[in-house]
Image 1 (cartoon, one colour):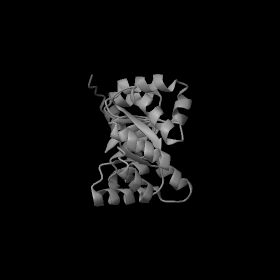
Image 2 (cartoon, one colour; image 1 turned 45 degrees about the vertical axis):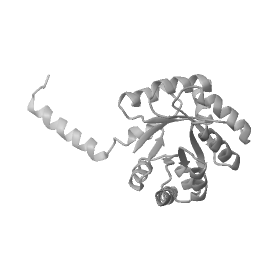
Image 3 (spheres, rainbow, N blue to C red; image 1 turned 45 degrees about the horizontal axis):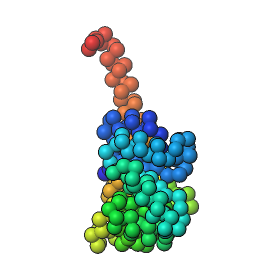
Image 4 (spheres, rainbow, N blue to C red; image 1 turned 135 degrees about the vertical axis):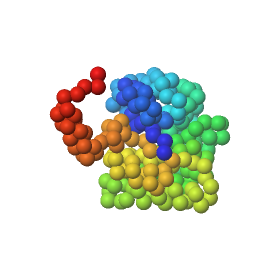
Length: 217
């Protein structure tokens, strides 16, 4: 499974990238606002830092304007994936931008039917939002499973990018189902390394080592 980092905070991306944990980055207008940076400037900095796809989102709502914004964003770097919403206009923009040779991430997906349309439109990535479905008492993981089955049934090459990952269980379940990518905040990725039994075991080992009076260095 590929790990994309869902943030526009350059320092957080750099830390994970140095550990080999970053296969790509996703941003959105809310994350750009949180960073306090200019979208073109920070996206360029991120794209220069990582080798994988960096999603940069359009803010227009009609197809022609999305296409124009997408073309501008794509010029930032060769590894930009233009992010468009899963609306009818977004699908039109996806089709045009894909046919022009750009990577396209179709976001805000909440149904398998939407994901099917995105694949037909040529999306590079489809971003189903797990956490937001959970918020309204629907099973976000069921959506990932449904999309996986549909894409496998027909050989679609669109990659399933599990988004709105909020917990380590979301990460684990997405991997078990077979999502191609997960995008998660740095905090969640780091939490994947934590386990109470690891902490207890380390504490016991160190206590016993202290009793030996030995040193390695």
